[in-house]
Image (cartoon, rainbow, N blue to C red; front, side):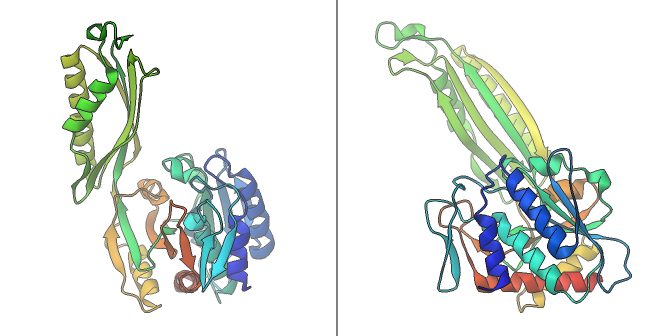
Length: 357
């Protein structure tokens, strides 16, 4: 089995569901030290920062490559299988190509590049939980001003912007009552939640804005009017102002409906990250487009409503573009990746390394 494939398969066999990445990061740090001569350290949140010296280059300014260590659930006991040039999971788990394919590809590209500038490799924790690792990353220790995050699926992707995301937690408190003996004395928190949700615009609101109700939980017993209901939802937009406006509409809707039923409502929000876009004049974009085209693809320069670590890096002044690793059906047990796609991704990354040298 070739080194790239073997490396990837070894990585996905190490459990690293979000919040449980420490063993994988320890193994990875040892490998980066041994194979790349990297200087590795964990920041206070447990993110791995590895620095690799330049090869055949007099450039002093480092370039950043970002990946994330965690996988979504179900991600325990992953066993990769190879069939007809495609790597899949053998069982009822994800494969973990999101994002360990990106890590394997970056390592292989560095090993095989004829030259490259100094590198800062940033492997974050808990990206899948709302880029938590990136939000706690020791940004001040980084010297890079240009970066590339390997975390998209399609190899032609050159993602230059991302959204603002607002996490919204809502608790509704009604009044409990016996559902058969005196239902008229109760105020159903579940009904309040249902009414408010049906009044919302949900799904894709416009080309750059989405709303999703992800979790609804209410009641405790079958024969009781439910006193409490909890809703976990989010809104995103490529426009920060639109994201804030949608959040206000959601808040107003729940407060109005709760008041109409005589229920109480409490709403808490958290801005997970703010909309950002890389300047069209950035050398990161030009280099990414050239690298993608070097493998015969036409670069698809675009923005996405999904969040990545690039949102945080861009907010701190590191012009960061997101590139594809070749995976398909990520976040599902049908996740897979073609070996040929991994090889093409290595060529794209290697082109970047050598162009910045």
